[in-house]
Image 1 (cartoon, helix red, strand yellow):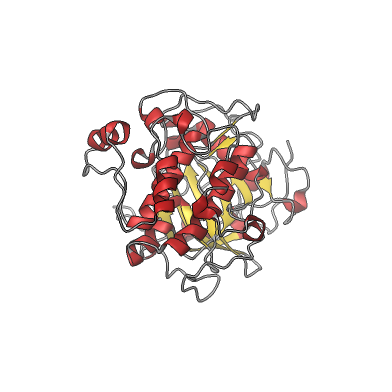
Image 2: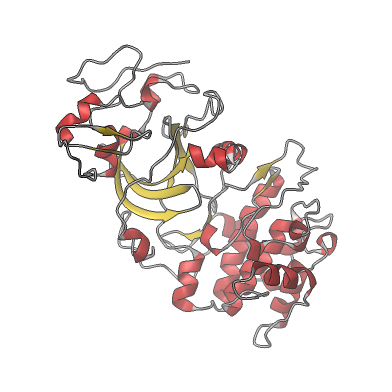
Length: 411
């Protein structure tokens, strides 16, 4: 266990058994606090979560705040420590079941990042602790031109923080809403970059298991960046990547996942097929309205229909990726991802140049700078950058010991 000293003095004396980050801690990062009416305006109301409290600002020195910077488990160089106080939150840009994503700037620099904030209480309640630990561990190891890089990790008593590259060209879902569908030449580059990233993951014993348009970002030059490894799984034995967990986004789940069967890398190739179908046609291959069971029944049982305006090579590739029998699916044979890369539809792709980012996609998102948020939904970016209440997590204190991380290139 390594302890570090605070970088700035505090004008308040606290008991030795309390750790304080700064007088303004959470509010300095996430903006002004809401004021809750109370009969006694001088009375401080303290919620279980120190990120939520209601009182005049001058009363904050009475609140004992937990500090990530006082207790760090995995980094021994105090100079490399990073915490919530090192970032300025700019905008709210996304959210999930128990996580929110913010655009942040690192203090003292012009560096812009995406900060994924995970509530520990919901993580424990939904039994996702292992998924979060796996996401952190996977992201510290992967290094690929089409996969988002993790830069920092740290935690406080109530939340976990993953700081990643901020990719602001919009996700495929956003761009598909703007353009409806992509021409085959553009979809070919996107699909090739996705295949390259997924191939890299599989070669390193990792299944993504949640490939969908929202998890495929575009950078300022139009290149694909795979993100969100919250459901990913890493295997120690790269030759035995089989799981029986039913997880993912149901519209993109492979038949074997829906049926609760053991599944392997073939489930990712199915999702790639769904993504490609959606890019080329503007819709999903199997639809059933809002009724989940109808969609899943069609995924398992209904024959794939392909529109006539697609090329014969595109038909062939989609049939191969969306084969309902996992063992017969393209990419599942002894050749692995090479079966996909060698398909006729990808015949014009120079894979070496592609992975060197030397092939420029024909579409470049409108990005005016590192801080640009024009390619995010306004319904999100217009929301206040504040956190929701969080209760004390019901888990052992050492459950996430060693969570802290600083990318070696930034240390």
